[in-house]
Length: 62
Image 1 (cartoon, rainbow, N blue to C red):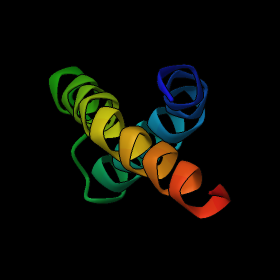
Image 2: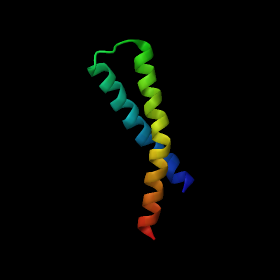
Image 3: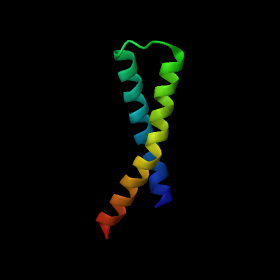
């Protein structure tokens, strides 16, 4: 399950980080620290999200 979660992380974290950066820019926060913080938050939130999706996929296939 770890390999599936790792593969999913590359997709999920990218989507979350990109969405967070777009939200920060749409809010008018154009400083480097705000953009990097949003990208880092998306990457961190991607870890449990990808684990939950992988767990759900394994449960559904059994």
